[in-house]
Image 1: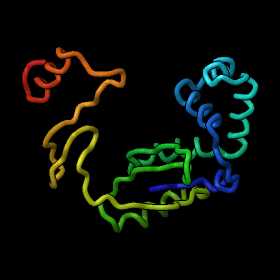
Image 2 (image 1 turned 120 degrees about the vertical axis):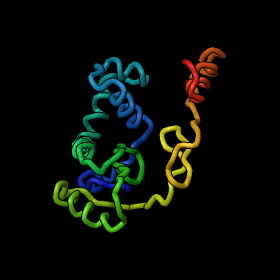
Image 3 (image 1 turned 180 degrees about the vertical axis):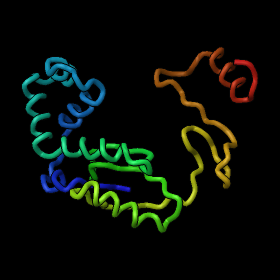
Image 4 (image 1 turned 30 degrees about the vertical axis):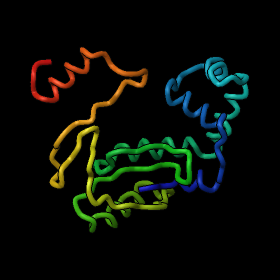
Length: 169
């Protein structure tokens, strides 16, 4: 489900590479001093701070607050702030397709400035959190994550394989 906060939508602000860099840096280290943010991004610390304040004024802080509220809603399984046509993308798990209207009405009451911009219905999940699923949703296998720095050692591969097969770790 793509959602959009009206204040940020009205600002209609395009994020450039530096804006995304500032947001990303603060997601990783929210209390980083501007000197560090500027150093990492290769810009003057004052420039980094000004960009962040401009984003806040444009409504990014509203998106942050909206995401905190959504994160506390039981049906919301995932909530991500995005740089794209929608400010937030949420994954909602409902028991029945008929529950969508009631859920959106609930969101509208809690977050009156929120607009649902798009929705998609998942017909079947084939992989969840690395687990391969059959048509009934039961795990039939696992696709382990690879370390981003390269291949793992043979010992780790053997231990992982034994754990996946139910053997000693």
